[in-house]
Length: 484
Image: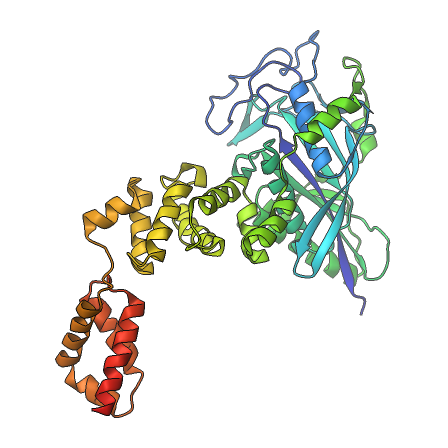
């Protein structure tokens, strides 16, 4: 039986966070909040006789991405008209780049369960976004707020061979865009959209068989599931001797399957020709060098630094650097603690308790009421033994809800940990005296009851007793009973 392998390339469309649109002065607005058609002018509405003007801020952002992907920034690039007719494309064509893109021949390095991989980036080119259609019963409504918003299309080579690799590529690219501050990465709002080109071939060959394109995948889960589904479908068809039809597909999340939208177009179907209303885009080397010098630390470099500098595991470091705001929060907390609290402890609290609360509350780290310095103060209180771990978790929950400091909550609620040996010994004696049967069973050889006694003592203390002191004193007391 022939063994098949998938061949996958990704096209990523990322809206650039500019103040105005790609070729006009209309503001870029949030489509999920704004009224329809409030950011439209004759230029982005495609009225006759209007002239586009290139947005310099969009070009700068695109160069940043190109440099981060180790692309060649081409000194001259051309805009072209990509002709197709659709209700959300008011001009009847899209101004894009094709043969002469702004950036080309880059790489993106990813990590997978099979090891590190380098994925080649064919090009990154500028274009304008389309409008948005809302389908209602037997008619559609068009909103042109998004029409003309700057888009950066990043096209990979077909170098990926599993859905896991495609997901890793998408996540790493999204992290880079967010770190550069050029895209929010909010997939639910459609500001970054993935399209997967998928084919399969006999393993060990280098042929490129007929591919399908899965459009507008708006989550990593959807992208992974859609690719796996297509790999399985194409493999079955080849095994049955059937042909693959080149087509554009959609993804039905509820049914877990792709569906046909239209036959897949080739470049000649769009009748590309140079945009007559725009001159060649000339990018001077001095400007590129200036932009290169302004680039922030990228996620891969930051990940390695977190491992080296803070002795984090690669897993913990990868979680922290996925969002620049989370990585910044972590480093600010590290700077605010003394040597009693390690960076590893801070990382575990952020990726554990903090992330769990943020997920339930559906908020990002920028919106929480506990700053990094406040978290550091809580962890230092725990390290000193003023409160134990369980109490600290409860205190953090109250801090996140109210914004109050750890010290205020501990004082107001009387949560200071009991570490006084005499007080703890009294609690232990009280529990032992109240449970003669369990003491007899323990002395008869059922030593697992030691954990039960520990729990009873902690309950008597209202969870505020120092667990290390309790265990040490309880062990001493039980040992004394054995020898008495």
